[in-house]
Image (cartoon, rainbow, N blue to C red; front, side, top):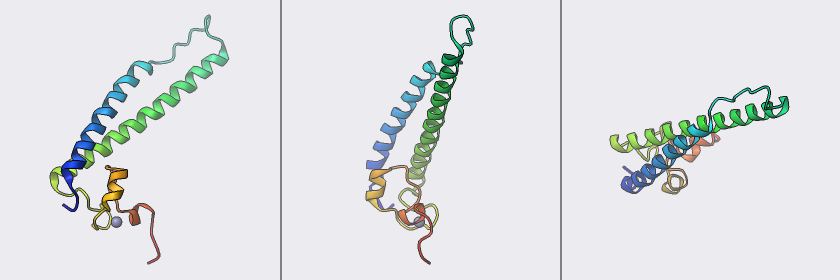
Amino acid sequence: MPVNAGKFRERLEALRAETQAAIENAKSSTRPVELDQTMVGRVSRIDAIQQQEMALASERRRHAELQKIEAALARIESGDYGYCAACDEEIAEKRLELDPTAMACIKCASGKKGG
Ligand SMILES: [Zn+2]
């Protein structure tokens, strides 16, 4: 393993706990919109629906993030952590410090470069 996986494991585990807590938090605030026709006007109903859609979008983002974190932790277990999933080169440690869930080296992540 090219990098100090223990250090990144700690960060990833903290990140996972944070993300899971955020998901739990969000659950209580993403109840279905109640369409109370007598109390809520049409505009604020649309508003509420839009807010719910935004909440759902960030929930999806959090779940995707959680999956990336789990995948990174699994790769620490299997010894693949720190290697690019695309080209098998080592991922720069600086890049992993910025994003410990990064699965590709900067070259592959930024798309094809030259030849
Ligand atoms: Zn690569």
